[in-house]
Amino acid sequence: MVDEAKIEEAVRLLLEGMGEDVSREGLKDTPARVARMYAETLSGMDEKAADHLCRTFTTGSSDIVLERDITFFSTCEHHLMPFFGKVHVAYIPDGKVAGLSKLARTVEVFAKRLQMQERMTGQIADALMSELGCKGACVMVEAEHTCMTMRGVKKPGSSTVTVALRGAFEEDRALEERFYAMLGKSR
Image (cartoon, rainbow, N blue to C red; front, side):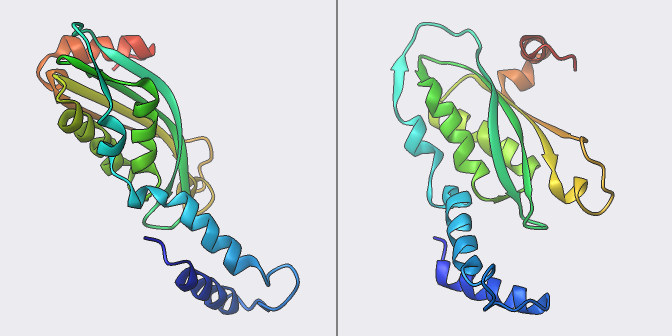
């Protein structure tokens, strides 16, 4: 649970530490705005993937279900700066499928936290496996990290790609290759 009062105080101290006058017109409401922003962008901390993946539908199909290009925004836990991009989620059902919007909501649960891309990728795949009981899951995240593009090495346009393979995707190389082909990417 985000404590907005603590965030407001911390932002006031941060602004003072930068040499700013926190009482000037442009900054006097900034601590409250930043606190509300963090409450919104970190709202996934209070959610569980199970809340979204519990609504399923029976299916006889065991073909790959792929939802691609799910846009996300997250916050790097190392620098408190944004990273953003696309998530591609695939799974092989074992008798039940989730509503398509539930896959995007599951991405949001993990993206709206202080996060590392590598961990988020695995968390999404693990949630699909545990909550859907699917035969396999594959998640690919492609993201730009502003902590790398705005500061440090300053390499705008660079992206980081992470992949998590679970179950059948881990065991069967052909399934993994099929996932990449469905995305129009090669391994």
